[in-house]
Length: 230
Image (cartoon, rainbow, N blue to C red; front, top):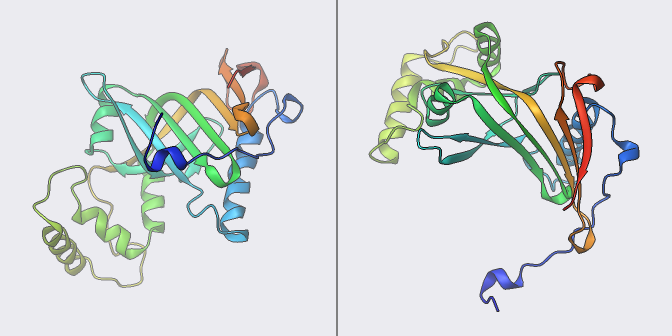
């Protein structure tokens, strides 16, 4: 018998569930709806503090999986997109193997969305437009941090930030901090989409869309829908 703090954590999920009757033949509209409902919960109840937190899984050269959390910043009919340093661990891994998976999980709603597919680099113009929309401090931070590289201590990181802040002072303009070299983004072009809805007694609902042809997330002919056992 397990003991300790983990043995006391047991919750029977009381979500709304998910039936085939509300699932379209292509996943686009319901994925949009679920994300929008999670964002709305952030303000209405406050129990979904970061609705756009998205886990991103890649593989290293030895085939070992690597996962981290980013922010979903765009979703179109191909799939979700995020921005990052392309020389980071995830950037280097995607350059060697573009296969990837993502997941958005909302425990308070007993819901999750999973997608698998292949990464495509975002166009430079799109990256530039997004970078210009970021707060000044976040743009400065992109210059200060060599993402995924070792740093001696917190003080060294803060010193690098201060140097970047002095180099690119806040003028109130979207162009006061230039786009760093090696800063970009990726879109997951989805081949598989799964919606998970928690239910009582662990009889969760899992509805999956698998790609069977060319087309976006909104094109029924591109997808086969099925239910998986929990």
